[in-house]
Image (cartoon, rainbow, N blue to C red):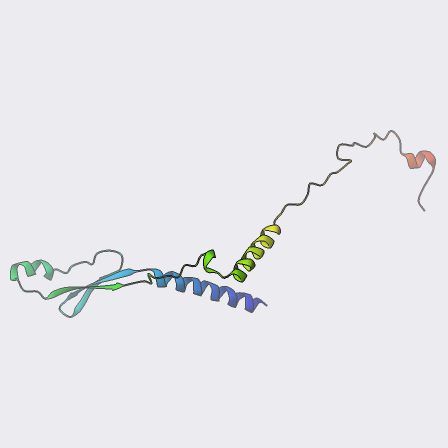
Length: 134
């Protein structure tokens, strides 16, 4: 039972992460100096090497920037209630009605003796009447 619950939760989390990461787009910037990778960045600009400033004087390029764009999924299928056929609409309506009905509150219970206070005991009745449970 515990293994099934753990497996179910793990599968649910992994599928939700799959949907999340399949719709997210991001870019990876890389800076090469010759054939050597100097810096790679995903969220900020890449740092340029010292050769980049000298290239202005030499007019010769040995550094290059490479940008990889990873596109997420743009076309998602959205369905509305009107896209369902009549039997599916009936099922959804019945399920929603029965599910909402589960959370109705109980009727207020009336307690008739809520404000009643018992009489003050002046003497112990059992001792006065000499009635004892044996």
